[in-house]
Amino acid sequence: MTGQAAKPIAATTYRGDAIENSHVAHVAVVDAQGRLLYAFGDPARMTLARSAAKPAQALAVLETGALDRFGFEDADLALMCGSHNSEERHIDRTRQMLAKAQASEADMRCGGHPPLSDAVYRSWIKRDFTPTAVCSNCSGKHAGMLAAAQAIGAAKADYHLPGHPLQVRVKHTVADVCDLPDDAVHWATDGCNLPTPAFPLERLARLYAKLADAAASQPVRSLSTRDAALARIYRAMTTYPELVAGEGRFCTALMRAFEGDLVAKVGAEASYAIGVRPNAQTERLGARGALGIAVKVEDGNPAVLYAIVAELLVQLHLGTDAQRAPFEGFRVPSMRNTMGIETGRLVVSVALERAAQTG
View (tube, one colour):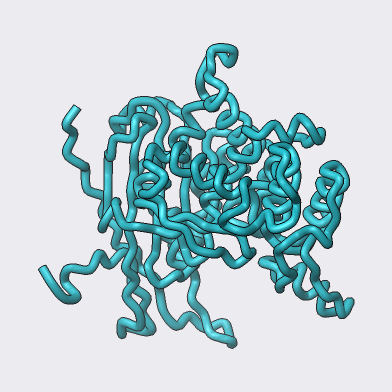
């Protein structure tokens, strides 16, 4: 098939009765064994996961021993996985992490930028505040990597460059945890100046299924070193969801609502991933172990992304009605003009298809 009919239209925005935009997206739903259970569009689409890959990058940092060496807490690990609002608690924790790691803001190779939070942005404007590196939404990841570079005996300088020993290690860890050879992962430069991976969308879902499955494994003492690290990352993110994003953010609200039953993370340009601990519903969906979900909206529209994610919670019957209720406004957003008059609507048309099973 060719042309418009072949495109997986996941959502349509209307102004009045006229179509304003059609949005192409892809969805992959897998289990902890990596089996594809449900899909929409192309679940194998090569996808820049952007910040949704942060747990895998944090895994590489954790496996250097940096957290124990420098006394990092699980809250610090959560910030390493976060794309935060640049609230004062985020900036303060970044500074604390730098102090623990015997590093300084001058060592960081990310830049300041407008915050992801409108409330924080208004505060900065009132104070005529100029953001610096510690204000970056990726500041936790950078502080963690400065510690990790030292933990492996490498220089702090140039820790962000693709050829630095730490980034070589990160690249291998990301590929390995996604069950891919190193050369199957493509790399580019992220907005925060660190390498960022691209791999098939279903591998992002697989990563999050592994996080959730490790967190659910009992007894804990029987976990492999890798699974124990994955479980710790899951625990950090779900215990401190406010450090993964912040007030008013979808990721924080979702993890709070599900009270540790799932882990979730957004990536820039509309990628998203969720890991759901094994339960009766994941079993009904055919999952062996935990469930992993990954979404990519091709035009990078965040409102469409959150509408699709909220719709998937409904279609897959994840959580209770009460847990899903706070996200109904994302699933069916109100589209109004500056006078508060409703001007249009967003209609999600994702229809998950059951994947053929071979084993």
